[in-house]
Each structure stands twice: as C-alpha cells, then as structure tokens.
Length: 102
Image (cartoon, rainbow, N blue to C red):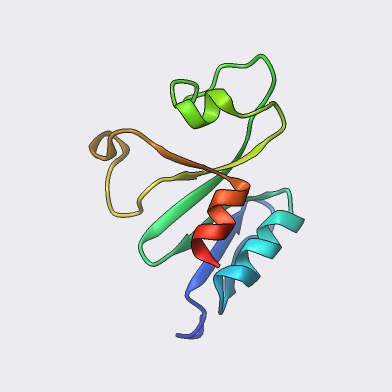
C-alpha cells in the first residue's frame, strides 16, 4: 500500500483494495456487490442493504426503519473500539454517506 492510498475496501472474494480518494473507493464499492466495507481515517463504514421482512441487528435504528427494502445504507463501525463500547450505530443513506465525504 502506498502512503497516498488511505482508503480501503474489503470483500470476501476480492480481498483488500486501496484507493487515493474516498470517491474512488466509493465508486468501486458501489460497482462491486461483494464489497462490504470502506475504511479510512480510523473509520469503518459497512455497506448494508435493507431486506424486506427480515430482522436485522440495525432494526432498532430509525434510519433503518424508515428506509425502503432494497435501500443501500452505510453503518459506521469504528475500527478501534469493540462494538459494545460504541453505543448506537450511526446509519446514513447512500446519498447522505456520499455527500458527507465527497
């Protein structure tokens, strides 16, 4: 990894990929359905698609409840903390996630 490649995506089939910008990592993640997260600046954002009629670990979150089935959401899951230390998940719609980082 080059020091300039600070944005990382991960998938089970493709492994790790590194990018120089959030926008490049975001576009790659959107085009590749097997990519499940983007990490940068000590943050990890999980790519979640809301499924119809199924319970999810995010079902208690307002943003998840209000989204339509099939909606792409991004869940903030900090890298340096155990999940039990984090508290409520921060969930953004795809549009909010893109707008807040580009």
